[in-house]
Length: 194
Picture (spheres, helix red, strand yellow):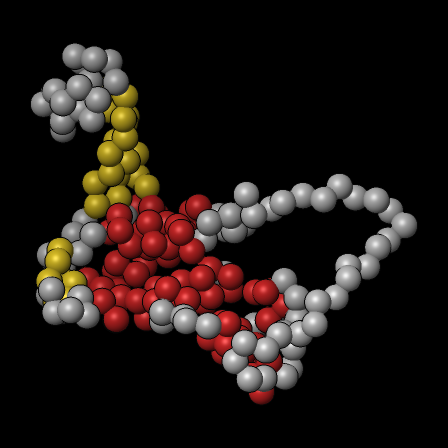
């Protein structure tokens, strides 16, 4: 295995152990030339998968790209990394077990959405907003409404209850701004969006 630091073609395995519920082997390596240490993963791949994009272009399936898109949706969410890894491995297993060598990107997106829906509502809405190409606020309202109908709590997603009459408003119309209420205890204001 080539060293990612110096490019040397030789590295030594210092430690190997099962990972991802036995679906992979984690190897800790060291480069004898520069002393750099790095980790590699060895996974079983049942077949070469090809993703057919909406444009018709075909690209090799990239597990890391799938993992990155899921990590973006889960950014700053309180989800155990082991659960995320199991979710990714489960999606990959589903894709490999279809028996198809070529998979539509839409099919992969639907599998990810369904998996995120069971894991974290906020991540589901984030992923759906990109996957479904949301253009306006009512698109978010519709997805949050879907979650509410399926037993999810829209307040868990948005942080506040969804107004009942949002969908009946003309586009661009909003509620009048309200002043925040104050309490007797003073709490420092924080910006959690940074």
